[in-house]
Each structure stands twice: as structure tokens, then as C-alpha cells.
Image (cartoon, rainbow over all chains, first blue to last red; front, side):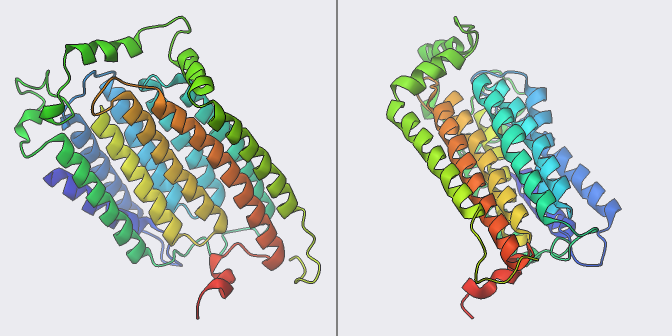
Length: 260
Length: 103
């Protein structure tokens, strides 16, 4: 818990210092040091947390988590929008890796195709269209209320993380020790919700290779039976959004100020 | 596995919120909403895979897929609005559109 508090504080200070702020260039050495310290603390926390019901490839998960969070920090703090968008692609790839570890193969591929492939390409097109001036725009190099923003965000994060951590480890941290005798059986739910043998067999069933090798086939069946109406409505929503986007972007600027 | 993943999701959401509040470029503001969506996708999938009680289900993944559809619609509409605003004022600075703010 102490480490978690420390991580949130260090992260908040580091992000505050890293936000673009006018002419004063941020001290790169200090920032790199803070980033390394935060990453080390994050690794320590993730490794020391109680292991799950099943534990697939934990080092991979830790590495992907650190990668995703570092990319997210760069998305928020980079003063060039194109680089922000490219770091977002990195974040999406790391996230897709995490989803693969959760046996969400279809979701992982869908995330890469839709986010990294479609949405981010649209973003980069708009950035290229709108940023005609060379060099950095003044509104990119100066954050708005960085102190208050960081404070609000990291207070929210502290509350969320404290709640999640409290759920995982109610009062006793010793059970979570990596070398403790209970480490193998330690679970990440409250003791009164401990899994029984039947639940464990259910968990393992999800990871068994099915006829479609993975969860894709069952997910498709699930979507087209349990969520059939919602699927059709999603299609209608996408059509409406497309029509709306075309109608908005094609509007003529008669009677307004001329385009720049 | 649930707790680390949910922690990472919460951190992604908070970072997106900070970016949404502090950045002044309209495009980056929309990008930060996508950052928040990423955290939520991670949370939904993690809770579906490692539920607190009961067997793992595919509902989390199904919800995440609907979230992808909503995110695509939001990105299309939001970017169309950004393009319109840019043609109107010639800048992407959020401070240039203060007319909506109570003075």
C-alpha cells in the first residue's frame, strides 16, 4: 500500500513536470529518472500483487503494462500531435497484447484493426490537414492548468487504486508475499469469494482450445444470439454517425468568417 | 490477474482524464477520450475473464466490442466537428472557442 501511494505521488509529480509548458524546456534528466523510478515501482507492485486464479505469462503482462502506461504518458505529454497519435498506436498494440493474454483473440485483432488501423489513420489525416504551419503551435507547447489537472487525475487514480487494492488484500499484506507459503494458492478475490474446484474447472475450460481454437467462435455465437438486437442497433448507429459526419464536414461556411 | 489489469485500466483512464483537462489542442483532447476508452476496454475484458464470482464469461468481450463501435462513431463525429471548427476559426486552440463559457 505504501509503494502504491508512493507510485501515485511520484507519477503525479512526474506528469506535472512533463506536461509542455511554454518556453521553459522540461529537465530531461530528472524526467527520465522519475520515469525509471515509476516503472520500477510499478513492476514491483504488479509482481507482488496476489496471483490470480490462473496465472498466464506474468512477466509478459508486467512488461506490456509498463509499455502501455509509458506510451499513455507520452500521448498526454508530447508537444507534437503526430507523435502523440503514434504513441497512441503503441499503446493500442500493448493493450492488444494484454487482451491476448486474457484469451480475447478476436477483441485484440479488432482493437488493432479498428483503432490502430482505422481511427488513428483518421486522426493523423485530420492532424495533417489542420497543422499547416511549420514548427510547434503555441497551444501545443503550453498546458492549461497543469497543476489542477494532475491533482484531479491523480486523486482519482489514488482513490480507485486504493479501492481496488483494498479489495485484493483486505488488511493483510503478508499473504501476497511472493515467497510465502501461501503464494501459490493466493487468490485475487476476497476470501469469502474463494473459488471452489468447480469454478477452477470452468476457468480452465475457457482456455482449452475449442473447435475454433480460442474464444472467437463462441464470442460470435454469443453476439448473434444473446446480443442480436444490440448488434443490429450498433450497425444503425454507425450508419447514422457516418451520415452525420459527412453532413457536418461538408457544410458550407456561408455567412461565417472565411476559412483561414 | 484481475487486480493488476484493473489497476492498469484505472491508470490509463486517469491519464486520459488528465490529458483531456490539460491539453489545449482539440485533436489531442479527442485522442485523450480514446485513451480513456482503452482503459475501459481493458477493464471490461479483465472482468469478463476473471470475474469476482461465477465462471468466466464472454459478456465482457461482447461489451468491449460494442464499445469499439461507439468509439468509432464518436471519432467520426468528433473529427468532423474539429474539421468544421478549424475551417471556421483557423485554429485548433480550445481557448479560441470560449464563447460557450459563461463570462
